[in-house]
Image 1 (cartoon, one colour):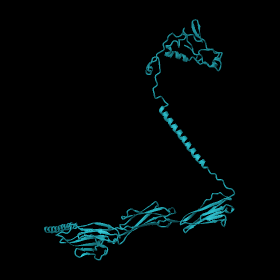
Image 2: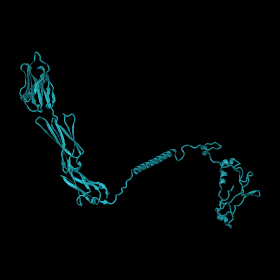
Image 3: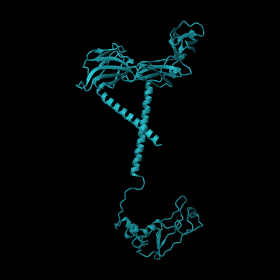
Image 4: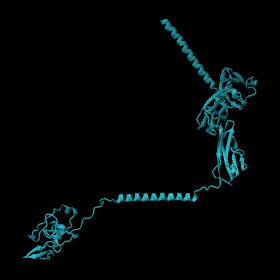
Length: 514
């Protein structure tokens, strides 16, 4: 076990040493490669020229000598390497046979800056270009530039003429040919459909992209807009190709212009055969009654009657035809003796009606405004109890309303003793019928014995009792007795109520004083 362990340990140590040595060599190579300065990546287009810069960074010293410089090309894919240019300080410049023959030259400069120029570039020139210095005693040092060839695609788009049908077909095509990198194609349209995209790479690295738009074409789709948009790196902006769909369909016919007022003697009566088709259809006029009347003139899709008479009292047929089909339409003309008066509404009447409607609307709006304003005013003023407190009524004692309400009622003060005369009221009120009855003698007050309003006034009016001149006690010596009271034996006795009340007069008796 110990031997095996030692054996595995030695193998592992050897592997680690090799790994460390590889890392060191790569680091040294990177450090040496930094002594040759180049541009890491350059882009160019076909038929153009490109400069590939190279410079030995530290220059020539007493310890390092440049013996030769070479430019080596290798494609992006593959292991092929070819010398395309050599520069020797003694033997000069040399250009070996290669795909770059007669297209490569050294730019002016010393051996420390052996830059080259490649003319008439091709797409196949894309690849890695290595500038390699042969030095003594250090050996070779190099730097690599990657040349990326770009190609602006040749873009195009066009509609495809199709016939109206029920299955999806290609109605438009768009292509970006020989582009590098590959282009992007998109479609913009309002018609329903979908598109497909295919791409194909060429040997020189370019890519051709094609796209087709498919849909179910109908007659209504003819002339609708469709746009193909191509986007690619070499273009300053996306390129758009607007187009219109081309859908073919059979024709339809319709006769227009007949106003049912073909009267004898009318001139220039015209019928128009309108057709809708793609491609355009031919128009043919015929008459069901036989040959076309002499007064009729045909001008394309128009039929013109120079003078209306009995010969045009027939049926006209318009027939349209294209390579996809045909259609026809007929119309029977009816010739009348006199012209029909067509009532037309004067323009002034229409304008007047519009103005009248506007005035009515303004009046309605004004009435609504006044109603709302009045309602708002009533809401502000209020129609219920007043919002302000009314002033208290004036009286001799100048007491407030609260005190008058809180003051208890006092019985009236009698200034003189009441009369001892008593009156008996009748049980039933006396009506005018009762008075007229001679058999029923009067028994009391004609109003049924109900106290009069004056009695209540004399007993409960405090202010009246304070003024002796206003109301005096009944039968006072200061006041004359009433008319219905007479004096008998020193006593005041009221007269009996009159029994001479006639029908129609009031049965109410005079006021009774107590």
